[in-house]
Length: 400
Image (cartoon, rainbow, N blue to C red):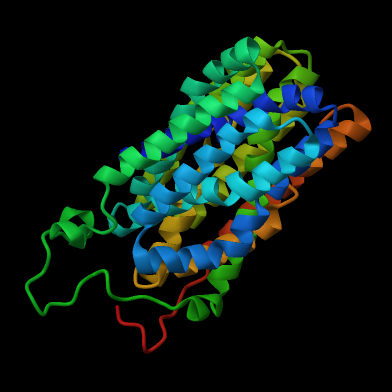
């Protein structure tokens, strides 16, 4: 729960809250929506490039140390937005201070620590962690909208940065990297007698994992799924504004979307522990396609409500993906494998927040993007279905 607090705070300023910041940023810095979207899209590049290195650091030193240091750096980055008065400086701050540190303290370190603590309920445990994103979006997006209206986007960003740094240091005091540090095994089981094999000791290497079909199917499926997730996280708020909603209405539905993803993540995580998570993702990919259809044709509150409900599973890709990786490839080199596939996924997803802004700037609406997302979501469903039918064969040098 302490790690979920990091995502609760982070979602308010760095995930769902960014949609609230987007419009005042473009107005204040006198640039188009496509350019602001490009900045947010480009923040994917440093974590993508350094994902494998981050994984190795967490395998060697533990996610706890990485979480504390990166949360302080990211917090300082958000505070430094107080002095940003040009598009160039916005790029420098986001790329130089916020991008990598924010990613590691909100996404990578909490995931690494949580994975170490679960085997049988891995997907649910990671889903509870990710539920912090939905809870934070629901609770904090209206607060962000109020702060932006009252004090501006710079002061709001600084407040969020201070909260992020304080949360990171506080969480670092309580969490432990592995259950063995408290004399336990994963799932809270007492540690085995001296000389008995530990369940933390086996696993594929990253090179061995990359030689399996499942690795690449999950990678491609995740990249396509993220086309919906990332574009909605940034553009859901301005999309509703473009359809005639007021800022208050758009903020309310954005917060409600975050609340729905809270329940959606927990439901998908629970189902993925009961059934094969790949089949579960394949099924809920149909929900994403349906949501894009509704957003394409609707222009009223009932339609926004239906689309929001259908988008409830949109944030579930990460906990289920990491649970599948942990189960299939083992814990020994988990963070290195996760960092490797994560880097590839981010490279493949770099355009998902930028392209909707380009479409809007060129056409004045998001319709072309929504049509494209319908097709992509349906393809995603097919890919995860084939991933579920791909079995991983352990090399002879990988112990069960």
